[in-house]
Length: 350
Image (cartoon, rainbow, N blue to C red; front, side):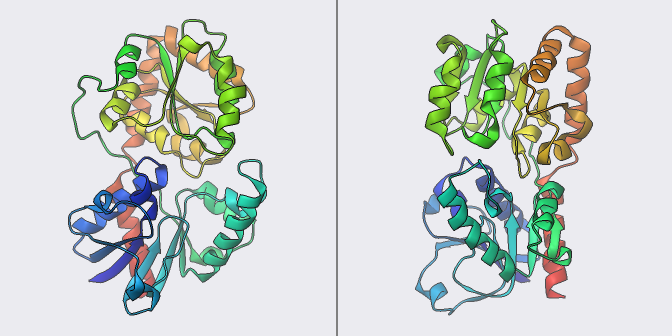
């Protein structure tokens, strides 16, 4: 049996982000595996979020920092290596934009985090990328040899509960309207200007955003989101999984026109719930969606507007896209994800 220590600080701190979801599903899979003895390590956050069957969880302490514990594998799941000992180190790279200058984050933040990540990548025995797009960017930057890299796509799960009544009052009201859903952080790379420009001219269409502020979030709210009529804009920072499920199931479409994505979990979350997807024809979203979504140019909001208007008036188009989405989402499961991850572990230790 392989002892694997996972750094899951992202999950302990905040259960809502994409990396946190990967942490949670990785621990759940590891806890069920007959080949893995999993440990969940965290620097900050709440231990209760790591209460997963079959997983030993604890805060990183002096026994780790003094090197008194040694694992077969340490897996850095959140872009940071925990201070402990290992035989082999696995580093998951969820996205690559911190590794080079870009407008998607502050200059000082990029320099500091990018330098740390570059150094950590050099230490890793294996680098796991969520998508081929992330791997290609990593190789383009000439930071690693391809022999150390593995593409292990994330999964998506069917909702564990039947559709019910909304818990959030705003969600309950929205279910009787026509709305387009955006799920993700309010930040530059998510391209919310495209979303607003696409939907603003469609007078009877609401915009629902589920996400918290990221880089330049307050500025985006003040300068971009403020252009939407107040009665047509609904920003929900944190809602229950069941309410998010209701929004996916009742939306005209999920619109994700990001400039950059390391994977794009909302694309699959929408598809598996029967929600049509309109997303970027670049970055990882194109790779994940393929022909199961309407792909648009991130710089052309008119393309998204045309796609959404067609979905509103063409039932046949909508039905076909939903069917394609459901079929595509079935190709991404957390079982398949962990099977590939386990293959990486065996290869390292063989």
